[in-house]
Image (cartoon, rainbow, N blue to C red; front, side):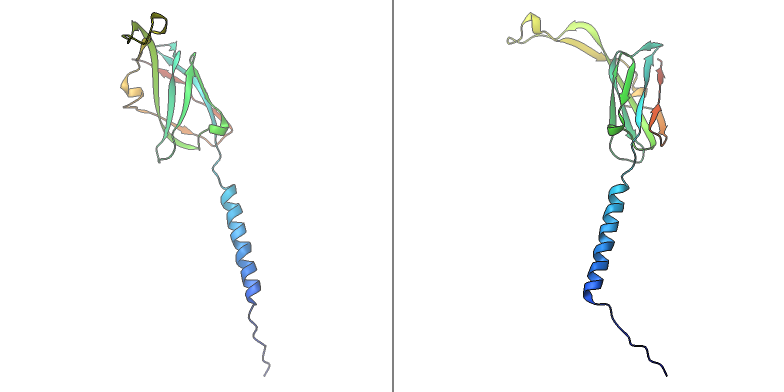
Length: 149
C-alpha cells in the first residue's frame, strides 16, 4: 500500500495567496467604475431658444444628479462630469428678466440695483417633470428638448 505524504501549505504561502487575492479584488474594484457619457443638446420654448437656464438629470434608480447650464439655447455636460448610462428624469428651469428692479436697501445705490428675474417654464418641465431620457453607453449623446406651453 502506497501512502502519500500529506503536506500542509505553510502559513507563508497562505498569507501570500490571500494578499494576491486582495490585490486582485482591489484592482478589479478600481477599474469597474462606471463609464460616463458626455451629454449635450438644445433647449427651446415655444420654438425660441432658452437664453438662460439649467438642465438637471436625476437618475431614476437613485444617485447623483448632474446639471448642465443653458446658454443661448444650448447646454453641455463634458464626459468628466457626464452621466452614467441609464434612465433619468429631466428637470429644466429657465429665467428671464421681468423689467422690475428689486427694492434697494440703504447700502445699495442705483447702479447696484438688482433686476428681478422669473422662472417661466411650466412645472411639468421642472418640479413636476414628466420628461425622461435613457442615456446610452457611448462617448457622447445628444438630447434636444423642444418645450411648449
